[in-house]
Image (cartoon, rainbow, N blue to C red):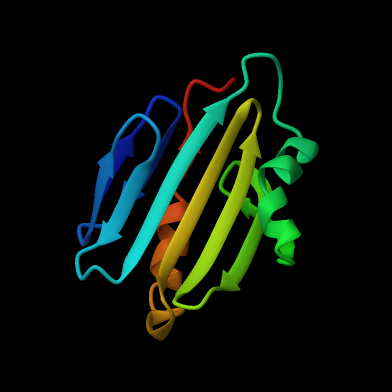
Length: 133
């Protein structure tokens, strides 16, 4: 497993997954190009990220009629939306831990739906906060 570190979190990746990062997002893809995970984060300097904050971040999905379910990913708590569009299957997490907010989007073509669900879940289970706010 390779360890990927950002200023605000760490995650472990199996050898068949690669990551690229810039200032705003980390993109993680499997070697066959079937699956993509994108992770972005924010840190509140003035307190904790609340459930109301999460609801605000996910407002667009709610307005489109998508529903969520509560979820825990390691030390993180939040909500998960699972939905499909015309071409892609999506799993979108809105997570918080202390002053940290993390948005994770996983997508693949509809024909590959659920193919990498277990691998994605294993990767996300290693997500840990750094420099807790």
